[in-house]
Length: 253
Image 1 (cartoon, rainbow, N blue to C red):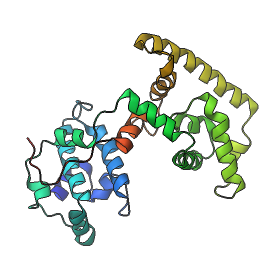
Image 2 (image 1 turned 90 degrees about the horizontal axis):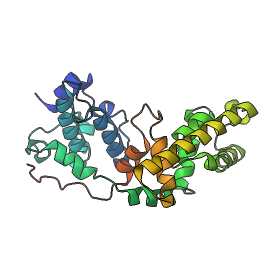
Image 3 (image 1 turned 45 degrees about the horizontal axis):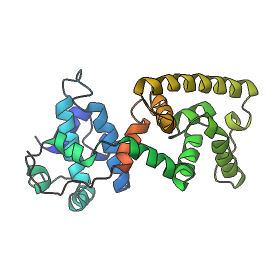
Image 4 (image 1 turned 120 degrees about the vertical axis):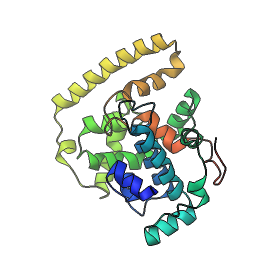
């Protein structure tokens, strides 16, 4: 059975882009990130209750191998076909090893360095604006979804949104502009409680004061954000892994 048929059998669609929940115009980075998110949900080690997890994971690996290969992607985009005899799919890959080569594990230092570069960057600004529109101005949801975010960042994030409203980049939404004082206070109280819990976590983990921000980020990653799979560590690993992808055509184990 070919790749398209297997996609339909396991994911109810033979459209490779629909499997990854992206469109045909997605960039290479967007394809990579979406592949990570979907494959995380069916990874055999993380979804042992799914009897088809291993098959889904293998099919996703082949799907990504096609869409990340310039020539293969062009053929699929133009003709809607996949060359099953190509080196991309005919090699006997160990797809778990392939996946880990693409997404190497990150270190504590990687996370802390990312936080320093991310805060105040244009990327953060765009992410905040996107979350503002996505959550219709709800600051509770925006704060819960923004990477590297703690309560002390709220004034800065609000300033980003206010500036975007003033320059016409986004529309003014009542949930943001008319948020009640009571709701703001409730959010601060929750944040204070989370900081206390994070302090306890830091002690349990044996981390020093220099890792305060890391503990808060790990604490935050336990919240529901983007349906529980687009958490902080997943985003960092998918977007900023340092190792390059494995070379095409190299035979796996």
